Amino acid sequence: MNPGDRIRLTRDGRTHEGVLLPSTTDDHAVLKLDGGYNVGVERADATVEVVESDVYDVGSEEDGDSSAVEFDDDLPTVALISTGGTIASTVDYRTGAVTAQFDAEDVLRAVPDLAGRANYRGRVVANILSENMTPDVWQDLAHAVHEEIEAGADGVVVMHGTDTMQFSASALAFMLDTPVPVVFTGSQRSADRPSSDNVMNAVCAVEAAKSDCAEVLVCMHASESDDRCALHRGTRVRKNHTSRRDAFETVGAEPLGTVAYGGEGDDVIEVRFRRKHAERGAAELDVAPALETDVELVKFTPGTSEAMLDAATGSAGLVIEGTGLGHVHTDWIPRIAELVADGTSVVMTSQCLGGRVCDRVYDTGRDLLDAGVIEGEDLLPGTAKVKLMWALANSERSEDVAATMGTSLAGELTERSVPPENRPVPEAR
Image (cartoon, rainbow, N blue to C red):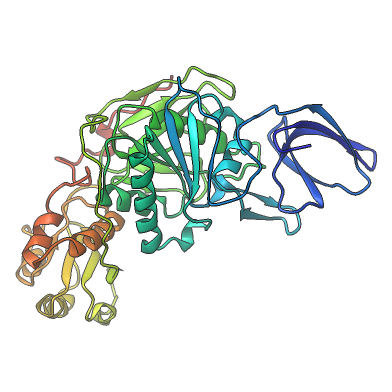
């Protein structure tokens, strides 16, 4: 009896039938039921019948940091890189908690619909919840993606927790020049819940990784329905809801594209792009993973003392979320000028998210420019922090940092900001 077998298990007069999944303990068998739930049953005193062996032949039984599955010469190769998160997690039936325990090959066993869509190489970069993500892991991830593409991967899918996915996607977008798609995906709801989005998101991400869009993308539900995923540019995406399956949105534009999904077992999946994007093979593979981690992000609100800026004393960089067009209380401006004079690069963004920073309209804005503040255009605050980390590590002079922040490197700056009411709504297919 091995993971991937369909089994019928009876204990204490109750019978369960489903696909055997890897378990955190030898004392329990974990089954994926037909209704979508996972159930854990103690093996002691249970009778087990193997209904069908090797129903899902998608991986070996070996543990380790890297793994491989049998290759089909007629299929493209997609590297699956796991960092942890809900999509790579299950319920630990000893505690009832959702824990990140699967490696990349275990994800293939847990999402059998991935089988037959591509050749897979599995690799674990981290096994953490995304709130524990760090710039060091971003760098490890960038190296891993670079190595997989260099080894011949036709696309890369990164399994990542949703809470900080937008930061990691931005980081890789700045660190990598990629000739193939690099697609982040995750899950808002764990695999044991019938409403889990893990299967659809993973399948759509693999299909996106086979597409002609050679950018860093985020692939998540486009609506609460199970009909399509949206493909967001990694530097323009934001998680805008705590728990909805369609929590991710492209800010200031429509998503780059969509992936139509027909349901589990459906082989016909259509990837469509509605906006201009980098084409497969157009860029030469390169990685520039250096980051300056001494960068702070501060949000201004009425009543916040300029003493808040003391945390940035001696820092290499500071991103401020200002109000409106990019403003702060006038009491902040002398302290900001001191930081700039001491060598801190200060970038102004807006907490409005929509629209652009323009510090040339009102006196406060002009005073900020005189203090040496760099306008963040329509950079999302989180993206601005990541970009500033990259710019500081890859620039020799402060003037170069300002120029880099004002140049769109990975689609993070839009040519114009589109109000939500004027954005096309991706059609259901």
